Image 1 (cartoon, helix red, strand yellow):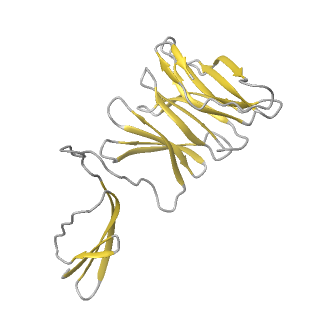
Image 2 (cartoon, one colour; image 1 turned 60 degrees about the horizontal axis):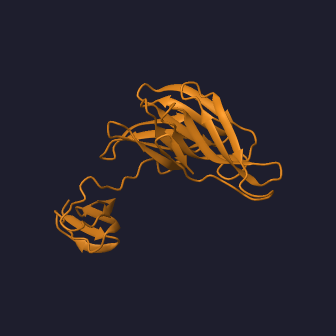
Image 3 (cartoon, rainbow, N blue to C red; image 1 turned 120 degrees about the vertical axis):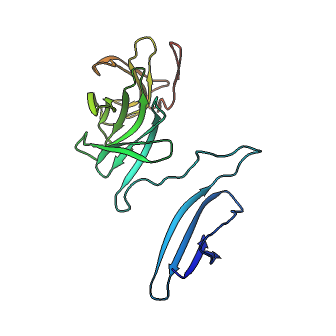
Length: 242
């Protein structure tokens, strides 16, 4: 190339071979280079997220990463950190649930697809349990009648350990996932539709080794018709705070 045209957010910012620029504000920016030689030219653009250091600190390791294909419908709902410092994303790719692992630099290490229901299923929550296994919770509809599922997965050896389906009643949700320190069992919190069409709180406990149902409790916090739902929870020792 013999000519260079650098643009930042659509505004011309330089014409040299090497380009240096100081961003006035933090946030998402688009930098484009058009290079030509009088006969032909080509343009390449890159999204950059600019971080502002606080005091004398630096933002090393911070980045904005776009993962996926431009023509695919992909959604990420949750993220979990592995003991070795990598990250696992959970979500959906069109009609299937997906898991994807990235390293601390944001590089995609692997992506795996699971067709868990007849519908457009997706993974909604992730957790690395005390044995280093991945536990995932999801469903096939966001806000309508749905099939809920939970599975335990050996992500290092790509082995599904068990899958538990909860299709009935169909209008139910598992919104929170915890692990009991005493037994290691998986606890799901959410809501279920009662016969009078209101929503009641639910507590579901699954055996960590088999996925078998250990305990199920439904709580109605008010009179008939009152809508209740567990949206959060935390384990402190063997005590659960909802």
